[in-house]
Image (cartoon, rainbow, N blue to C red):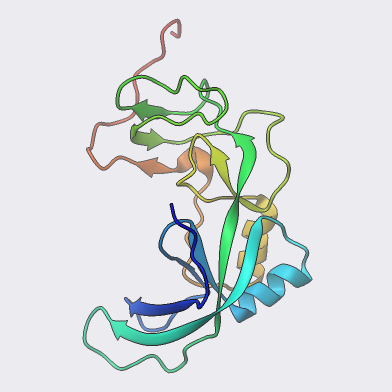
Length: 181
């Protein structure tokens, strides 16, 4: 994946009525509103890097309707790649072929996820991060979830990790593991 370099310019596609405080961008990059960035720093949360100003060159609507009343100032950030690791024994992940063989990256092709948990002792208390074994899943701390609720930040849906369901092929949850009853 190539790193996004300055100048940071974006075209936004508006799906609802207003633009949100938090948006996924291309690659590993995220866009956060200035309001979000200020509160994140003031409260001493961890896990985001960068905070580069972004120029919004255009806002298009997904459907017809009025232009947004306000276009926030955005910053480009990246969530850290954490040492936290997916607990492969306790997580409910359906792998395409074989489960991961590398204990470090824990990456393998996944067909479905029916909840996951982190291996005890691997998380270093980051507030937002990408865990080993699920680099595509942004994971947040309970402190981060309270922060989002307290400030009313928009465009974020937080799901407890054990309740996350991603099953594009509709395979259903994994069957019992060998040796289990």
